[in-house]
Amino acid sequence: MKSNILDIHNKLKTKEISPIDLVNNAKSIWIKNKSLNSIITPIFPTNLPQFDKDNLLSCILYSLKDNICTKNILTTGGSKFLSTYMPPYDATCYELLQKAKATLISKDSLDEFGLGGVGHYCFTGIVKNPCDPTKITGGSSSGSAVNVKLKISTFALATDTGDSIRRPASLVGIVGYKPSYGVISRYGVYPYAPSLDHVGILANYVADCCIVASYLNKKDPKDMTSLELTNSINLQKLQTKNKIKFIVFEKLLSLLDPQYLNEFNKLLNLLRKNGHEICLCKDPAPINEINKIYKILSYMEAYSCYSCLTGLNYGLNVSDVKDNYEQTILKNRSAGFGNESKKRFTIGAYLTRPEKFIDNVQGAYAIKNKIIAWENALYQNNSDCILMPTVQGPTPSHQQPFAKNNYDDWLTIANFTGSPSITIPFTNINKMPYGITITTKKYNDMDCLNYAYTVEELLQRVKNE
Amino acid sequence: MEIDKKYIHQLANSLYFALNDEQSSKVMEIIIGFQEINSIKTDFISQITNNKTIILRDDVANHTNLDVLKNTTIINEFVVSK
Image (tube, rainbow over all chains, first blue to last red; front, side):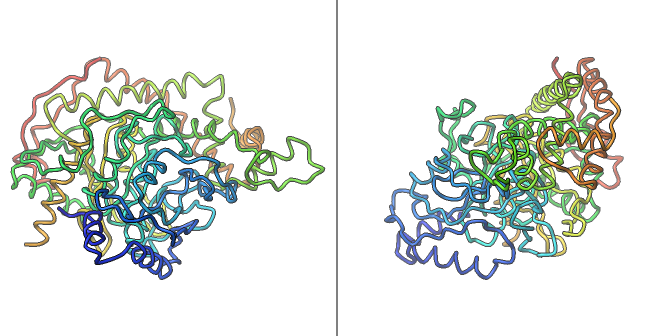
């Protein structure tokens, strides 16, 4: 079983390395790669807890996307508005990792409040792809993906509202796991769109995601949407499966760049040769409009969530003493928010105008519910999971970051349905990594991890042959 | 309601921030793209509620680009429940 956490744990156990060696090594990698701009607040602590051999996460280095609250440690949300903000409390997911004695080494760059998909909207600047710095990292969990890829952190916690964990994972060549809705508590995590927000994990192997998730899946009384899975996530249950029925969408294959289609076809062949089944699905056309529904719901919720930032109680305040109440807020919000956030907030406000609320918002929710019914129906023939390429073609450059990518929209389906979805590295094309995404039924997280693990092992075996 | 740049600027102002001209143009462009949302809703919902089937295709052999799928399992039709 490939697992960085297990490898490091064993080395700590045999004293081949010490916890402080791990931190020093991570710090030196970060210093060499500072130009990638992956970290907002470096921590790299020197005062470390004693290694606990009975605890797999003990002394394991991790980082947090900087929208996860850490008491008395800067939590900027990637925004100039909160660039000096120290939360007075911890997020539950951070508390659980502290309890497990894992070592937090950094707070990572992200698109402002998670509102972005390319890694260009953090107030500290553009995050660059370690595989080729001229290419985008994807977002919004850009910094966390870079840190895990470079092994600055062994794993990272991040958030996924549309595809914010899975897309950067694919673009840098690591594993990105978005669990079912509620599996990891959102308490203390800055929202983007609460009905779609998920906390998830970035790591180098499926087993690492499984280990971390097993520590984090707890019912949290502070987050009423959180739950403990009936079929709990546990490393002991991680195993390869003999016969998996994969659903593949015909429409998506027709959109793929030819070189990528060729590689994906090879994967399908490999799966079939190994006893798995591929079921081709013709999707209904309106699914193509999913991007619009996502925008309506997420922009509307985002604009509502961030109306509270005024700069009066905390956050950026650039006002003059002569300014009245309204002028103060106008100045603070104009100076504090980045262009992308302002754009999305304005559209959110437009869509929720009272005279259009039913058409826009209720209409979008109605379609979302139908999409959930549609996805459930896909599994009625005993199919196990959906398999799709994570991106459509070559990684865009920083100059043209918005290359058409309909695949983003398809990844969002798992946010609508709250289903577990995981991206794993699959191949390299022109030296750039390329991922595939596996999505299963809501709350079947252990199955999702097992299917991903099966494909990961298979690809590893082929690579070694 | 007629959408123009002035309206977009007013809307941003009501949210207590200022937009520049380039930003308001981008906002306009996206909002115009949303105008068709009602027809999408109607099409999609009628398709689902009329019990239109979603078929896992069995005629994949005709897909020259997808030769790997020639032997793909044929799955029965099924209906999306109301």
